[in-house]
Length: 416
Ligand SMILES: [Zn+2]
Image 1 (tube, helix red, strand yellow):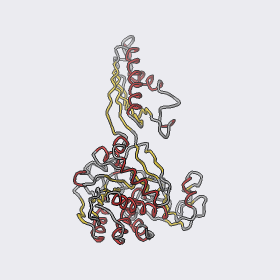
Image 2 (tube, protein in one colour):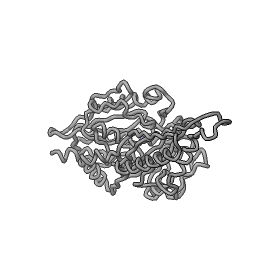
Image 3 (cartoon, protein in one colour):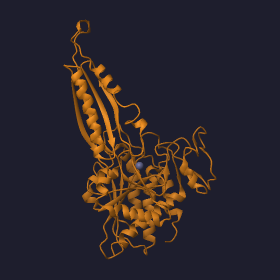
Image 4 (spheres, rainbow, N blue to C red):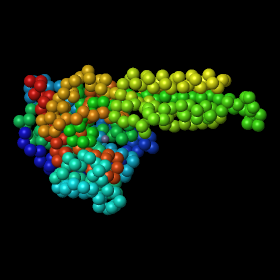
């Protein structure tokens, strides 16, 4: 494969980060902020100029486009997906990226706020980037590599395939979504119209990584109904629901089953919010695990607690209601192993060692997978997303572009 020139993705990335595309949790509109659409419109014109087909911005602000196949045999249509918005946590206005050429190792002090230091010790991935050109912020905003690096890498790969027709590929569909950071990225995503059989979000972190697992997530609503009477005359009558709630919370394990005591493949049972009066207390729990069996164990634990306390404090009444939030996308992806196999091979062909990872959360890819479009998540090369200490290596971005090109090629190769 001919080398990937940095003009294909780096110039684009530096342009995209100048757009402030922060989404907002507080908004009632879709997309949550109109400024996201400025980047979407810019991408539409860029895709048109590159000669892609069916370029459009949908009424909800998604950008769709098609790269036509250059082989005659039928190759499954694959989708490449990234999101235009940046996190509501940190400002994305007036981003001034700094390129630290030929990184020599050690901490990186950010230019405009010297208190902001990307510490080598806390960023083990930096060790693999000695000699790379590292892009950081100036310390006053986020960088927006999440997910403008993904957009730039997809655009770079498309440009590369247009310029190098010897790379054989089937139909490639592209989607740039909005409002991903507030969990709404696929709300109006029309899977049928998109028309891909398999897709990839380019929204992961460390070079070489690919994610095919997310949490299985449920939400539990506990309602404790006590008995309220005038406190001056409450003897033998009042049952205070706050006190039952407090007792329930102290019965949770101290050394496990919580977000603060678990990592990797462990799940948790997490009291997330509470509304309380003497009469009635409502507690919302987040329940997380990587399989449904683990979820059900946690449901059982909670149910037992509620039953015991109900018995202990009559006539108080405790109800537990469980609602499904989302499921591990591996349940879907395991039924379509070809999606992962081809991506792992694409990463291998870049010379990187593919690393399968799990996401302790949900992703748009997980939702799309359950909407009928199996969608693993491929690395962008970015780190410290949603913070002023965000950074990305230019050489790792190049590997991401290369991975996408190989991926398109492998799908065609394996269909021949
Ligand atoms: Zn992202």
